Length: 184
Image (cartoon, rainbow, N blue to C red):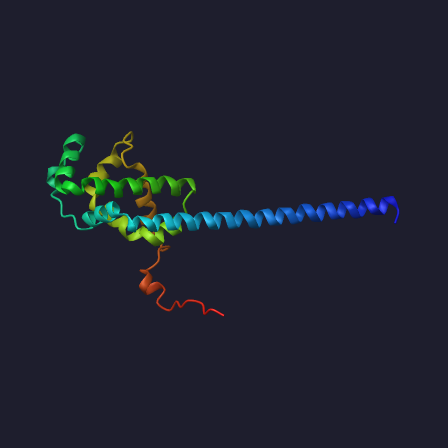
């Protein structure tokens, strides 16, 4: 084998090595994203085991609030009315609302998978938004008001997703024929 042939083979081998490394890197990045999405989903699901979150969410799901006590633009009075209505559960309700706010930012930045969030929480986020709509709707009208902006954004995305027909029916209906894979 002469020097020219050896150099050609070295170039081919170098190219194959570079392509192999690129393919392996692509695979590793894909696996890293899948792992991150899995960790995020587990973190979200852990909220259902957090006592404050569960109590706050239960208080929201069962709220029957007199909206006449709330006035647009009266932030301090509205805060006091919420605090009075929820009593000792007020901080737990705020835990839920601030969780939705944080999730909105994470979904927007791509740090959390929208679909994982949707599968776990789409029903309760819509119910939470609807329960507080009398309070959130005026916020939309004030262009400079950033209160709960990411929670409102996230609720809008979930509602749009469902209105476009992309949402799924409840899991007990959508996946009624699902069976786990048999172990071999």
